[in-house]
Structures are given as C-alpha cells and as structure tokens.
View 1 (tube, helix red, strand yellow):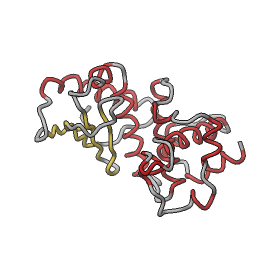
View 2: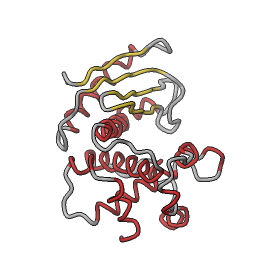
View 3: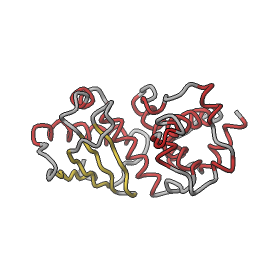
Length: 216
C-alpha cells in the first residue's frame, strides 16, 4: 500500500489498540479498489471522535483528490462490528471514489451534482463488495422517493441546503434523503448501460445520470 499513507491523529484519543486492524482494512480496500480503477496516491487521516455515524461508529470524509479522513469512535458499540464486517472497507471505498471524482469532474456545486456524486460513490462501493445499500442509501422507499424527488430548478440550484437534503437538518426532509435519491438515481442510470467500467463510474457527467430519472 505504498501509494496510500496513513496518518494517525491522536490528540483526541488513543488509537493504538485498533491501529493494526484499521490499517489492515484500509490496505485490503486499496487492493479491492484496484480491481476497478487504478488506486490514486492518497493521504489518509485517521482520528478518534464521537462525531461519527452512530449506526456504524465511524464516518469518512473526502477533502480533495489526494486526501480523505476516517473518523472512528471505539466507544460506540457499533464500532467493533463495523471494523470486522466490511463496513470500514465500504466507507473507505466510498471516500476513495470521491477523491477520484475530485480529480475529474469534481463533486459538484448543485444539488443534482451532489446527489450524483454520492450515488456514484455508493454504487461504486456496492459493486466492489457486492453489498446491499447502506442505511443512508435506503432511507425512503420508491414511492416516497418519487414524491420527494426535486424538480429541475431545485436540482440545478447551487444555493441548496446540503445539511437539509442529506442529513435532515431542520426536519423538512427525511434524514439521508439526498443519499438515497442519489443511490437510486445512479442505479437507474446503470440499468440503461450495457457495460460500465470503473473509469466511467468515476467520470460520467452528472447531467447524463440525472437524465436517466425522467427517461427510465
């Protein structure tokens, strides 16, 4: 894993007991990602904090094309299971996709582009591991998704409220709605394609994916 360098940030708490397992899972993910795309050179920040997804005891965040972080909370009862059941690997793969997309078309500035980027990252991880949607990728059912899917003007907005659409801030939308709509949207786009390789899954223009919702 010479192209991925792990940096342990422990000012917020000791990670020594879990370092070998975390490092092994990250290294394994690098090899699996390589089955679809060439893994980029990356710096990986690993830190300890309670600010994670409670349901899994960890969370990832991509900053740019060559840097992402993994925050873990060993005090969370879901952390240990997530460390060993593939959840950590999927979190890493999701963030690696974001890094790859940052190096290409970018994450995007509009709601529609953000939905596509999150959906592509989720489907990328699902394809790598043969895994079902994560909890945030199935927050609402198909009927509710159709009802809540934004119109074209909203999709094109660059002043949308990301925390509202993706995290349910303010209570206007269900928690994780943006992730779920993005995952479903990309799934629909994939069904229109005869073959999609890793390069396409990283670099497809957002508008091409968005058009699949109305045409599918």
